Every structure is written in structure tokens, then in C-alpha cells.
Image 1 (cartoon, rainbow, N blue to C red):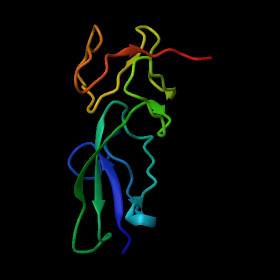
Image 2: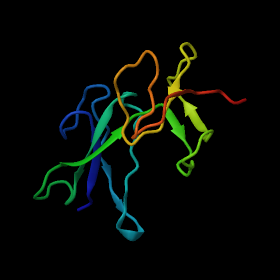
Image 3: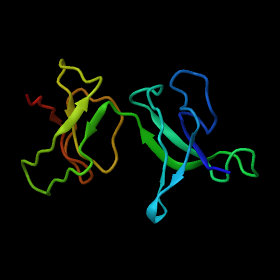
Length: 140
């Protein structure tokens, strides 16, 4: 049987609640042991983390869906996955789109090993794990 996968906000069960989970899709092996799944995330909620749930032996078999431990954050922001920056002042990279971003107040971004989801009113200061936050500037 074909392995199956879906994304879920709560423990791995398919939810009828809007934003609760995606539909179940097939998982396809690719070269090098990597797997690929095409998931329609249009039903998910921006700003939420979702679990990656997989049934490794396919529907109707011995095992059921399990939580892989991987989390996916639904962001309205997209950037070039190949973007690189150097550890130096003045580094720039482009954000492809920013769905849900406002213009007042100006949206901000920072680079970090793990994103802090707390609400800040005055920006984020630099630390050993992140850059300070900066305004996102629209380029025409």
C-alpha cells in the first residue's frame, strides 16, 4: 500500500474544523531516500504550526498515522530558498511575497535559529541566536 501524509494542528487526526488539517495525500519516494508529498495548504491558518502526520505502511495496514515530530509553520511570507547571507553588517535578501503583511505598522523581520512567537511592540534585539528585527522595505 501507498504511504499517506497530512498536516494537522492538533494531535494527528483529520479535522473537519476550518484550519484544522489538510486532506490526506500520497507520499512519493524520490532519489536519495527523500519523500515528496503535494499538499493543498489553502485550508490552513496563517501563523499556526502544523504537525506532519504520516502512515508509513499505507491505509488499512497494521500501523496508523503517527506524528513525525516535524512541524511546519504556515507563513504568508515566501523567500528564495537558496538565499544566503554572510555573517556581516548590511546583508540583504528578498522576500518574494508577504500575504497578510500590513503597512501600518511596518512589518519587521529577523533571522534566527528559532522564531519567537511572542508579540513585541518595540522590535527584537540581537542575541547569540538572532539578528535584531528590521523593517521590511517594499522594492518596486
